[in-house]
Length: 135
Image (cartoon, rainbow, N blue to C red; front, side):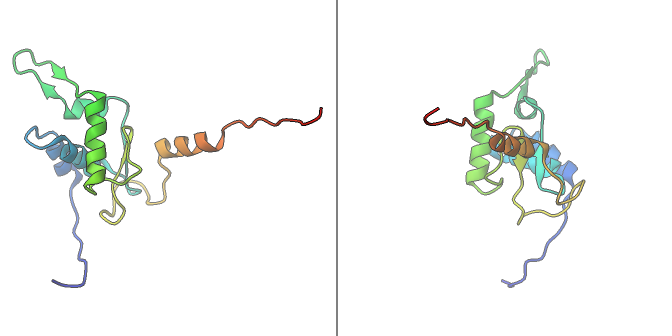
């Protein structure tokens, strides 16, 4: 095996198609959705409930879409992280494709992810309480 690490490109639409394949396990489908949606910064953000719709099923009798429940979506994301298909920072609203695995996508590599930016802001903006001793 060669010491070099050649790379190729992928079309994101193909990964989107794979994310809808009910024959695949949920962890792989949620990974495929991330690979099909990531921006140049590696982040693939979604609105609440969107992942459940993609991973859900369609009742062939009524045509009704059954959204995959939140807990199953979370387990799929956690499994994909454990298997190395998604980065540790991944969550329900933003899946992060490992930086060593991808290059390219819309936007710029140094773009800020709105979801992770909000989380970071939330941690740093916690109000502090100052106590005056002896007052």
